[in-house]
Each structure stands twice: as C-alpha cells, then as structure tokens.
Length: 289
Image (cartoon, rainbow, N blue to C red; front, top):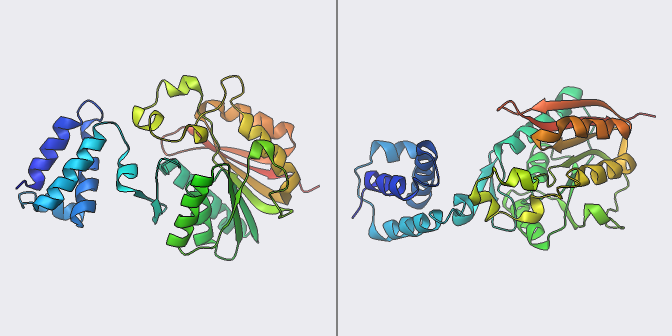
C-alpha cells in the first residue's frame, strides 16, 4: 500500500513535463483531498499514512488522465467558484479566478451605489457561474442567463439546483437573436464572451486548447470583437436608462472595447485590471437620456 508521500512523488514524476512544481503540488493536494475526503493540512501532517488500495486505484486513474493534459476539474467533475460548488464538464469552460473578480466588482458596485437591481442578464453563461453567484448574493433580483449550447445550459441548470437558486435559462445565440428574450429591459447585463484569438491560442496550455469548448473560447482573427459589438448593440436596446454593462475581456483589446462603447454612447466607462495587473474587465453605463 502507498502513502500520501509516495503519491506526491508519483505525481511529480508523471506530470513534470506538463506543469511546474507548485502546480503539481496543488493538483496532488486537490486530488488526494477529494478522493480521501480529508483536508490538505491533514495530508501534509500525516503524509506517511497508508492509503487503502481502492482509493489508491482511484488516484492512479486520475493521474493517468492528468498525464494526457485533461484538466483536473473535468476529471473530478466539479470545482469551486466564488465560494460555491459547481459541476463542470467539457461542455462548459472551467470558471477562473479573474471571473470571480468580475463578480466581486458587480456586487460591490451594486452595494456601493445602492442600486435597486430587479433584473439581470448574463450572456454566454456556460456553467452558470456568474449568474448563480450573483443571484446567490442578490436573492431579490430576477436573473436570466442565455447560452447557445444546450449542453452548457443543462449543466448550468444543474448548478442552479445545486446552489438552490432560481435562474431563467434561455437557449439563444447573441449573434442571431430573434424573440428569445422576453424581458424588455435589464438593470445589469453581464458577459464573459469568447475572446481568444488564434494568435493567443499559441500561448495557451494544451489542457485548455485540447479539452475546453472551442465555441466558448475562440473568435475569428479578422473580427476579434464580434461578440462585444453584438452585446453592446443588444445592451443599447435592452438596458434600463442608467443601467450597467459588465464585460470580461481579452487583455489585448481593452482600449479597443472602450472605444467601441464610447462610439455606442455609453458613459462612465471604466477599464479595470485584475490581480495580475492585466486589463481584464470593463464597466459602462448606458446614458440617462
């Protein structure tokens, strides 16, 4: 029978060509804590404790999949976002820390400006992480969320049930909207749309490009702002006067998106950096007139 300490060595050797040492340690701790149903502090304190053979077999199977570059979140089938549990699978993007920063910005804006938010729309909801986190923290708001993918919406619905929130999910293509959106106006519209260019793809880890859904990631090289244009146009017609638009963005197109919003007569446009110092989110207000 193997000990946790020996499994740490196995992971380090098997994944050395895919991840750096700190990433491997984090992956190992996550896998062991999930399968052994213990916390990471205990794993480090009792690393010489032997692991039951059935659990060791489970860990070995996870490691075998990790060696292909498959994200650990897909292997385990779940992750955490903004302190809430979420199911994830290859039909949805894995929620990321910078998107948590966007949610925090939205909630702090609502709190600091004392907005009476009764209706919110999340465009391109994926796993539902933004819509569900916002609804959980603003239970009085009516939250709707759209996505083009039926499989993504099914996962989002399961996540809404998991987190005990009521979201109005709609299957729709923001590039070709017809009459799917019944609600006439929203106080807040949020989107983390596809924004990765083919040039960006060259710099990305294969565990993203080979496993996460391309329709949620990539945009045409000749029109990288295609979704921002469509969403901004939609927001012009569907935001209440003084309503807010929040975007997560490609760090390379911050100024271009600001100009796009200025051209469409948005006001009080703010480009914000994430914790890594990169331009990653924008807030804008529709005019009051």
